[in-house]
Image (cartoon, rainbow, N blue to C red; front, side, top):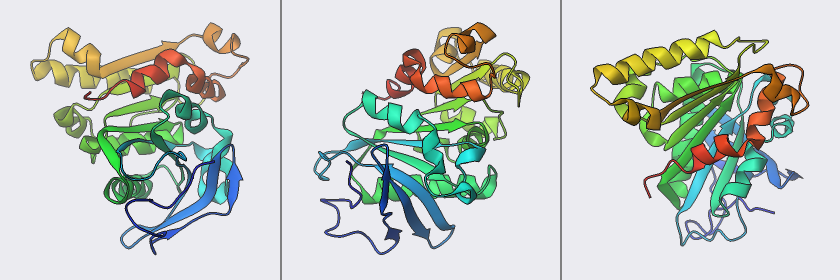
Length: 258
């Protein structure tokens, strides 16, 4: 079981944090960061028992889709596997799964505020701050990348569409992996293909080589066989399978400056 208080940073839970009382899949549900600027930010948390604040830990934030939003109920976000699977890739990593209110700018601001709070109040290795978004959470994540991409080491977007400012992202050159089904039942694959092509064009205009671009930008479009083999008939719901794809998850967590 993880713990919530930033041990080694403060002796007790800060007043701006309300710690949840329920646990699920190793996470504490129902935590609230009371942001003076952005209101109540709800999230689930996994903080390794080994964390004591004396050593910088990695930070991974996953932004679930519609079914994980706050109005769906505390802990509804934990039906997704991305946070749980992430634990397997780094034993020295704090993992947060948000429960925001929508997939727009307000939620993007909350995701940024939560990231900054943990960076400022926990011992976090700033070269290992990872973001993920699935479906509507991916849309939110793309807005984050169009606002504060420099906060993050890498961004994984799954089964979604790009809504954020690609020009802002291109200035920061934060690595991005776009994964979706060829015939995603909600978005289709064309929105991510369009975003990929536009961002690639921006990087080319900056003078980056193909190798340099391939290092920071990946488009991964899966056919139906990929999902069928993993027990999914619907490609959008099948986006959950990406959490169990070691190639994809390893790409995310190996994108650091070390």
